[in-house]
Length: 146
Image (spheres, rainbow, N blue to C red):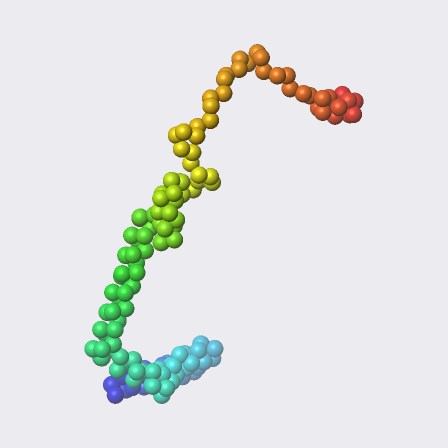
């Protein structure tokens, strides 16, 4: 009841200001003020104000807002912990499976065991390195007359 009275008073005051503005030959501004002034009365007539008043003074509604706040807090906390521990649940599962198989999570091929190491290649001196074949480069140079 009080909310409806307050909204009606605000609308009446706004319409009065709009009338004064129109008297000063500022019709565009007066029309805009009248539009804003009619919004509170429209909200009262549709029942939105009554619903908001019932919700604002309802203990059940405030407990519901509290539960939503706790849910949001838990969600944010779990996201922060997940980022800190390294990835999503799917990524952690893949890492555990790879650890059991003996493969690094990002490896492209399985790791080699100690017994399967390739034999060391003998180091060749630089002077004995084979000469490179520049025949294709020579052909290009000859073609261009160089």
